[in-house]
Amino acid sequence: MTDGRLVGRHMRFAWLEYEDPRDAIHFDRTFSSAALGWRNLLLDLPAAGAAKRKDPAHPDLDIRWLSDPGAPSVRGLVARPTGAHSDFLGQWLLNPGIVRKSASDARLTFGTDATDQADLVAISGHGASGAVFGEAMPGAQPGVKGNRFDAAALMAKNVKMEVSGRLKYVMVASCMNASIFAAPKWLPVLKKDKPLRGILGFSETYVGDAIGAAVMRRFGDLLRSDVLMTVLDAWRQANESLDQAWGAVLRQEARKDNLIRWVRGHLDELSPNGKVFHFDPSTFPTGVEVTGKPQDFSAIVDDSTFFSGGLLPGRRGHLVLFGTGDHRFRAGTKATVLFFYFRPGKPEMDLRTLLRFDPLLAKDGTPLLRELIDANPRKGPPNGHADGIEVTFTEELQRIELPFTVVPTAPDHYKPDPDGRGNHGYFWVMVFPNGASPSDFSKGFPNYEGGFHLRRKPLGPTRR
Image 1 (cartoon, rainbow, N blue to C red):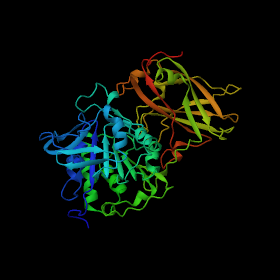
Image 2: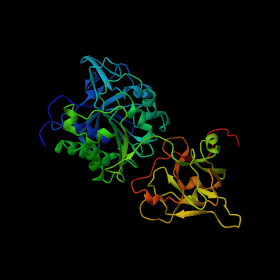
Image 3: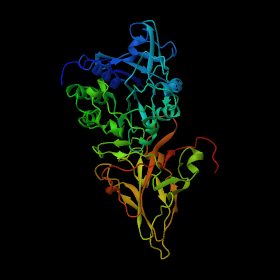
Image 4: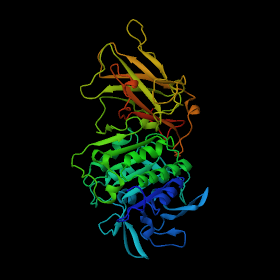
């Protein structure tokens, strides 16, 4: 079956938009087409004029038909929440339903009273660390801080609630939220009772806008043209054809999901202790298991970052490298420490404009710390920037502190973040110990958690 309309029950979807809605509009038009036959769940809400729908339980939730500015005849029905809706959505996303008694009596619900539910829900906007944010909705606060939806955290908070299990996928169309670094944040919803089957999104930058619209059209067209193609393969091909850094976090059993099995209710059953895998362009098709366990070695910046909201120009600090449990840095080996500017492949990162490390010397005066140029194999062509350090260990250590000074002009080199919080970028830190090299990780970097913000001014009073 490779063409014609997919018959059977309507598959349902809903889209929550925090920024440019073009991806939402074209997803709606493609998936609602006669060929695919999906239906927008929001259509069952009462009409509020020709262009809007309303949820009586949340009358301030903007739900309306929006048009692509470049193609006004192409429209989609889109919900545009604010931060005020986050608590509700943190539950609704786990069991996204609607209770409809008549054309004029219907509302969204996450309860057992639902008369219909979504099979897929999408969230789109700016994003990172399991959150999506933006300011495109009516009545949005200036800056995106007040319009932030911490989707992964709020869903994890509510994983014990009763759900039907009909929702299979959440699409998070934003930067970084389907990266290997964000993948552990989705484990609670992928390992709970009646879990999701997968998170579809992006491992690095998501352009959105017209490119995002093209991705959504291509994704739907691939699923329609070959109903035996897996959901993961369709998502991969849709993005790679447009040079987008896709990502996905899936239950192991979901690797074989395709549209015809989904429509017919024949997806493989999820085992109680099933594994979760992360996929991106560097790890497809095998993927990397996501465990959520601490890394053997990690790095943190000392507590100055926690009291000022981030590192400050001219401020002193320490980068702490440490092994967890019984893991140690071995004598006679070298450790490589990589620094990433918000995204693993972002080439603007240059350590010389960010931190100046104090000399680290052996007893005979031999330098034990040096900067590394073009050490990150994922940032693209070499550009002569320092993006790492190498530390030589002359004795076995579980922990080492490396003093540094924040470059006084550092904020001038990194753009202010769009979230309105006064940050000039977030910097991840990753440790490759005991002679390991970043180039050894051809299947993608393992997860890490260390990092810090750069700020021009403190958030408030600090302890130092």
